[in-house]
Image 1 (tube, rainbow, N blue to C red):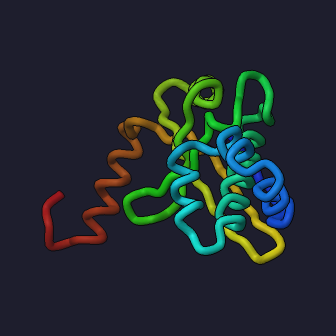
Image 2: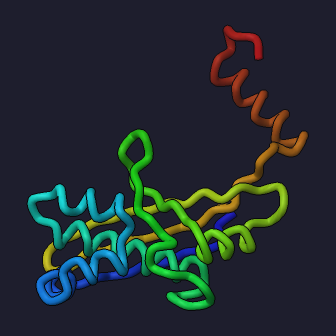
Length: 155
């Protein structure tokens, strides 16, 4: 079940101005070490930073807190899954809020999509609560589906 949705648009030019004016003071305040390494390794670093900024804003909206209630910029880190798809790693106040949103018997799954089309960057975040075990009824339905999908195999 979906427990949170957030989206954000970020003007890449705004990030460029912040990088030019504040440099490391800006990047160290907003981004984790991993995010800085990833963005600094790109030929065009401002769009990379802008996508991550938008993801953090979208995540804060999906958490229902915005940048308040103990949720800070560096509590949310854009990371890549093994296949390369983006997701978010939450720590601190963001992780606490996420735990409070997820019902018992469920685990959190965070879906993230990032894009940019200069001068804008955009992110969507969906927080899903996924059951940690299938109810008996669903387990039978899943087994039946598996039998239909692979009739020559015993399930």
